[in-house]
Image (cartoon, rainbow, N blue to C red; front, side):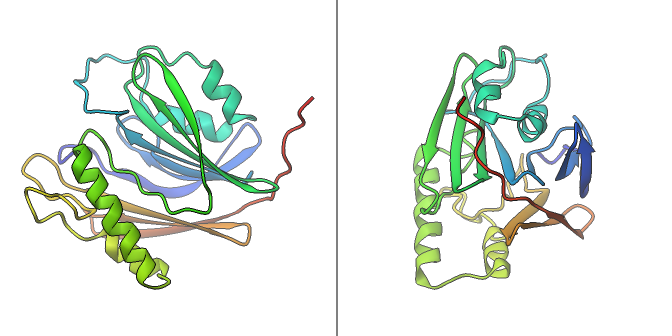
Length: 225
């Protein structure tokens, strides 16, 4: 939102023996995107399956969910056992690189949570249901996937693509918003390769760009016992 405070630039934080890289929301002190040295990446989008009417006060900010998911020893156990009652609806994406890469999605709709495993070899894109209709999300997804198929894209090209504004008031297909009530206030790009994560943060209000890196470990799967 245009009235939302800017965030603290990405930096390395340490807690409970785990280091994680993330920007921090100056308003709620949570985050929407982070990566740990334990080879886990977590990203949050506002909303679940459809736009909802906020009914504050809530138990805590959704940004706290990201930090909890980054720090917990087993994210599946955390998501299945934590009481999300009175937490505003959200969609959580978790990527783990243990003996193999996995991608999972967890959606909390305000009443119940649902986890889904996604194919790590396919391209995925999410658009917040609080800002885009179903048809707009489908169109944005198709345009992005088709754009990726043309040729192998560099990090810089993907970042530029996300900077495109949604000029068309009817379609809102660009990945950055410029509307009367809302606008994109920052862009965060995360790149993981060779057990290292690089994070670029562009604060559009101050026009300042920040960059930070964190080494990751390739972790083995938890014991089934």
